[in-house]
Amino acid sequence: MNVLVTGGLGYIGSHTCVQLIEAGMNPILIDNLHNSKLAVLERIEKLVGTCPIFHQGDIRNKVFLFSVFAREKIDTVIHFAGLKAVGESVEKPLEYYDNNVNGTLVLMDTMRNAGITSIIISSSATVYGDSASVPIREDFPTFATNPYGRSKLMVEECLTDFQKANPGWSITLLRYFNPVGSHKSGEIGEDPQGVPNNLMPYISQVAVGRRKYLSVFGDDYPTPDGSGIRDYIHVVDLANGHLAALRKVSTMSGLHIYNLGTGDGTSVFEMVAAFSKASGKEIAYKVALRRLGDIAECWADPTKAYVELGWEATHSLDDMVMDTWRWQSNNPSGYPGN
Ligand code: NAD
Ligand code: UD1
Image 1 (cartoon, rainbow, N blue to C red):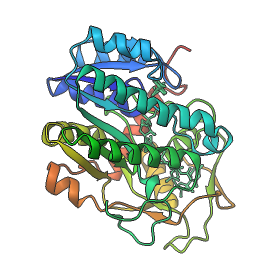
Image 2: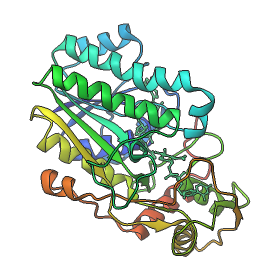
Image 3: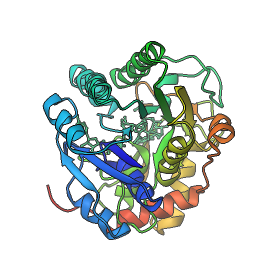
């Protein structure tokens, strides 16, 4: 199967590409290198022995996208390309709506013109806002608290309308909880540019000596140890969730929505302790004020993905921290190059 992967050099895209090749599929990658480096391609080749086809360009560029669809034989699409930093989205809402919403619309229009009617799209647990209860099911109300979340919700709503009008299409929305970890080889991983926004890359940069200490955003939440609880999911499990969706629903017309999470919650203090154990390094931290917009706890009910896709997360928290540490300690400054 030939799978066009937008944002294929990014964190989740690169791991999915490896899993696709190992499963005998043929990914064709697009990326504008806004948040990734060409070195990722060499690492993928090192891992799987073959370099995937790569087209450098922007999904909002209709001429570029049309030329890729004209040149390649594409059966289906997995769409990762987009911007993902909540804080930045508050400062640059237009950029987020343009990249995430407009980018998706240009992609859909190009697919329609090329006669390709099947797509899997990255969504996020952020679309549940501050859910009234946990674990969170797919039928819970959706709500956005910031421009990033709103851009994801807008994409979901646009595609829901589109699928209603075009019932022959297969559209799959995968709502990721908190992706962490890296390929067990330590060759590919998360390489945030600048100061990391998310917990796991921040902790691993403290462990490797790039940052002095972690700020724990609040120890007064109504949780057992007072820190925020999230559903961390290993990125290889997440990648395999895409393969499960490809196999099970990408040829079935309809709108398919799945949570991809483990169903377990881990607190910030628990994550610090697990990382410290895995790395053998002390993780210095200071308790700071709560981060604006943060919620106390968020974890998935992943039953639907298990029942309908036959998918479930298999990596433990220890796997997540060990694999993150292998990647970070082998690549203290991330990928080489600009
Ligand atoms: P990432 O930034 O590592 O990967 C995204 C890739 O898309 C990057 O390589 C970037 O250069 C590329 N890109 C961005 N805009 C583009 C454009 N207009 N044209 C072509 N390429 C473009 O992010 P990621 O963590 O791999 O996330 C992938 C998707 O999953 C995103 O849509 C993100 O919103 C979503 N998501 C991520 C998380 C997470 O915590 N990582 C959680 C929930 C949802
Ligand atoms: C964040 C985004 C969410 C996005 C997700 C994945 C916000 C408000 N939400 O979710 O929209 O889908 O990333 O990209 O940004 N923490 C610290 N110190 C840190 C960093 C985080 O204590 O330096 C805590 C947070 O308060 C939270 C937990 O760690 O309790 C996880 O934070 P993070 O990794 O940023 O993920 P989310 O907040 O769940």
